[in-house]
Image (cartoon, rainbow, N blue to C red; front, side, top):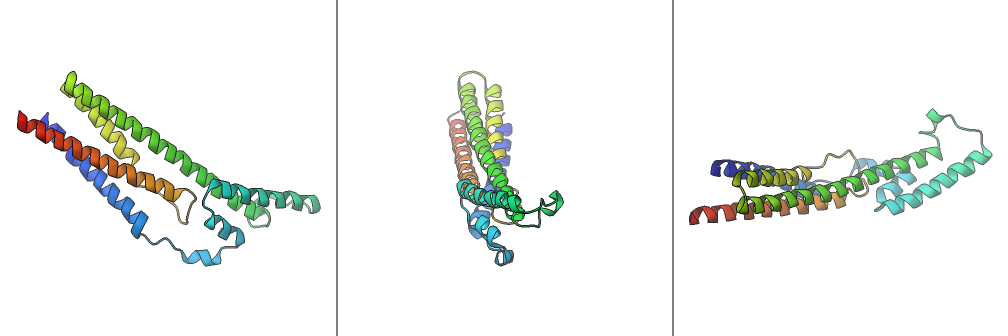
Length: 197
């Protein structure tokens, strides 16, 4: 059993450490500017500068109002032409940014929920390990640590700045560091317990 515990702790340390290094790189070192931003139209610049869904919602309302006003005085534009024709182009661009921001908010909720589920499984595993059965306890510990490692995994992202991305990255970095500290604490307690026996 000791070999299994040590093997898993080494694997978990490897995974969590490399993930944490990647989060640090993306947060603090990776270049964040793009040559393309100077070519954005006004809507693109507003979307790029927005910091929240609320700001995007205001932009969307303005763009939607322009579309409604346009449609009252002009002939309908064919659907396939709307991607490149104002005011539809701006409305579509803002709509995509809102969908992206909502997706990131969903991922942030999932990160918090599942990481806490992993922490709960870890605590239950510790209690079972100490009071009931070592093998069942180790199994629950493995589930908890695996869940925590999975949900702090690196972000896959497209090009360009997306609303909420920094916030999600911050939480992933925090939870990665917490996961590492929890793992280090478990390792320390395991070594201390071995020395007593």
